[in-house]
Length: 69
Image 1 (cartoon, rainbow, N blue to C red):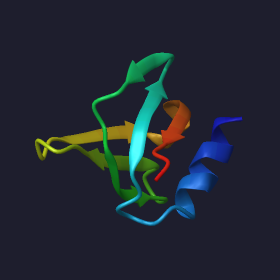
Image 2: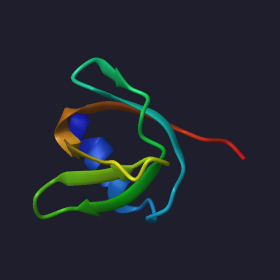
Image 3: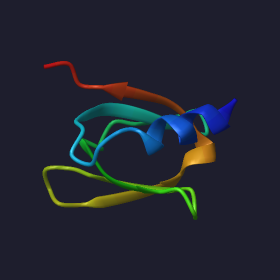
């Protein structure tokens, strides 16, 4: 089932606004924007307004909530 999150991330453009993600059942609400997804490694890079970078394995992401505009 997690593979579908990886496939979803392949089609989301960098700069997409994120409200929160869940990784291994833990809420990660500090992320604000998708920076990059590397399909070869499965790593997803997120950032926030403090310019912090968060890296997660796409197979460990349970949920992504996108910001509505």
